[in-house]
Image (cartoon, rainbow, N blue to C red; front, side, top):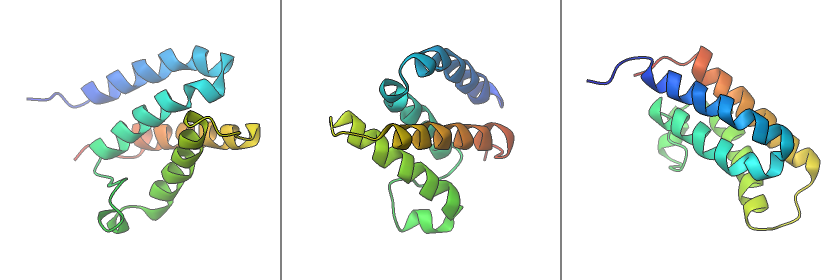
Amino acid sequence: MHEPGLDRHEWESEWESLQEELADDPAATLVSLDRLVAEMLESRGYALTDEVASEGDDPEVVAEFRAAHEVTQANEAGRDVDPGDVAMAVNAYQALYEHVINDRTAP
């Protein structure tokens, strides 16, 4: 049986470990943030990659993740990404992380 709060503890630990890297090189940290936040949202029932299934999800949460994810993919592909877009993505991941940790209960 999976203990409630175990995911939360693991996510908080991982998030904390990313903070120094984030301060040093935000663009390089996007992939790790994206992976962690996607895992968190999917574990709470969000369908991030399925357009039809995601229609039942909170559209603002899914849209915010997808916008940050696009920036992350562009950066990972080596395209020139504006520092403002990197900051937007980092802020979006932060907001989504806090949303799941504070507001979204486990299924």
